[in-house]
Amino acid sequence: MLPGGPEFAKHFDGRRFYNPDARQAPGFRDVLRWKLATRPERSPRFLADVEPAVPPRRVEGGALRVTLVNHSTVLLQQSGCNLLTDPIWSERASPVAWAGPRRRRRPGVSWEDLPGIDAVLLSHNHYDHLDLPTLRRLAARGGAAFVAPARVGRLLRREKIGPVAELDWGQSLALPPFTVHCVPAVHFSSRGLFDRNRTLWCGYLIEGPGRLVYFAGDTAFGAHFAAIRERFGEPRVALLPIGAYEPRWFMSRVHMSPEDAVRAHRILGAGTSIAIHHGTFQLADEAIDAPAKRLAAAAGQENFLVLRNGQFAEMA
Image (tube, rainbow, N blue to C red; front, side, top):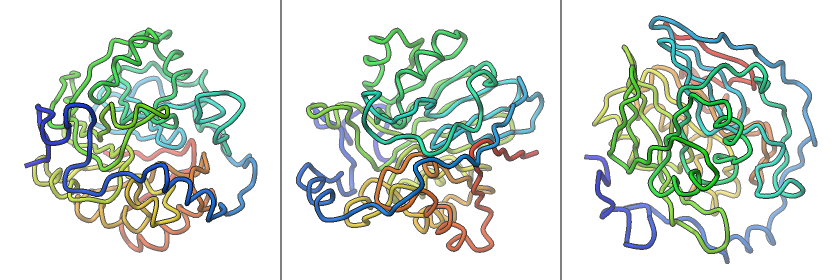
């Protein structure tokens, strides 16, 4: 059984969500200790090495095309439908335009070349995953349904972003020809000083014609990977985060290292895994391209792809 389910009881205490049977996210004192005790590795201010792709408008039939746009933004195209995960086209992952983590690489798909989107999957409310300027632009285009974890919908509706469907762990939503299943992650939520864990965080299993695609969202390593495989089977494709992992004493509670991601890939039995959450924003102490290099060393012969922004993989 997956932890949680249609009811909040196992991961909600009446006021806040939490990670059952896992360590909770570090607190404010830990943040101060991290910021005062360490310095991030140096990285270039900007890397002009992205060759933007122009995806097809639609991919018909059973083939799956997976395009890494940037960070955790992935365009999934199959059976004439276009799904987008955690979209961000903004210059900063921040509540303000003048401060916060700045983009180090441009998106791998320009906004003008982004095809029509049928559904947007949001894993949680952190600024690098729920970017309101981008979501407003997507909503203004029309045609997209927005899927979010429990209690995130209020923020979206207030910004006139919708239609919105909220899911708790263990709940599912039919988006023909797909069914989207909301699954656990080990993480936390907040957009300010006083809203910590007031909304849920999650991953998604996308069940489509002939295959399962797993989008892990943002997560630490945990028992949920084995539970997901037990309940749904082996995913054909897994989108697994590999970045923002240093220092480990702090980040291991909320983010996987590349080595953790390889362990998750093996536990899931994924046919192919694709690295996300790296290479665009420097959110922790490791250098911007350190996650990709460490993953290459850790993965060995495993089928674990590191795509550059704009690169794609096709699965028959």
